[in-house]
Length: 339
Image 1 (cartoon, rainbow, N blue to C red):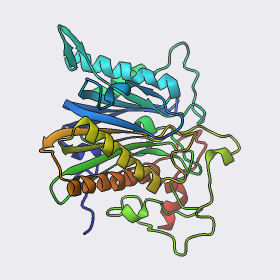
Image 2: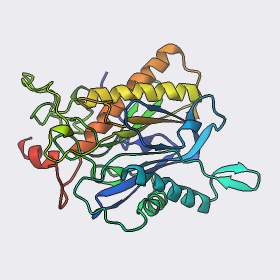
Image 3: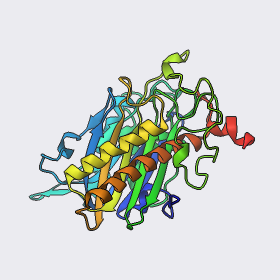
Image 4: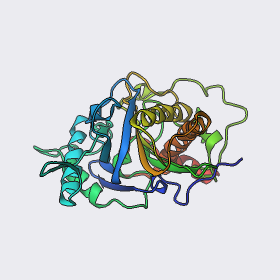
């Protein structure tokens, strides 16, 4: 049966989640924050060879903290890890966090992507701006999710095109909602050869990233490995993402959902999970629906996680918009007129 997407086609179709962006266009970088209200069960799966993270160890199933208050995705490479401190400041001002006696400690795992060499002005002085961007993104959180050149996707790039921030959702026949959000900055490419077609095309819903389908015949160079290393000025990489559902999951089940969502990377990016990518998926369960899924239902959930993630990645590239100083063209500028 056809895929049914949520009313917003966004991560926020999962009840209990809000998304906020903040960016600096001169910097060509930004931050995206996912707020969980109430705190949600979370896990992480890291399959790239060059990750940058904060507070991800606590997400392992054997560790004691069970829920998170927010997740933070940022540009800026290691400098961007400061963004989580800004998110913590915003949550503390809201009175939200883990109560430890009289203290309140907001739990905010974070991941970063490398966008330092993307044509933006990174001469920020003594302190990087990511803490302030994290605070602003948290304060801006809501259910409407902008896509393209916003938030953590502001300065993202792929091997051949500008990257961006994408999101998508799926409504399963059993009433469960799955949502995905991705900041798309891979070493590889989201499109097939020199065509306008996306690798994620088999999963597209309602023409959400151009409706081009798969090229026929498949071009001879479709499977050629094209990466940023082929460019005159190589840039670094990473796709960081969130997969979420409203069904109740344990931390161990959420971990398995994060692993499954990485299949969406493999369906949408060629190549993916390389030594030079920091590919990472956070998984979130808001627990609005009963859990204890049988194996068949959990299999359907994991398949939806992969397909929804693939769609979110393609939307991030499709929705990117041009800005002064860009080092990559946008999909829209190259291909929209030929639709």
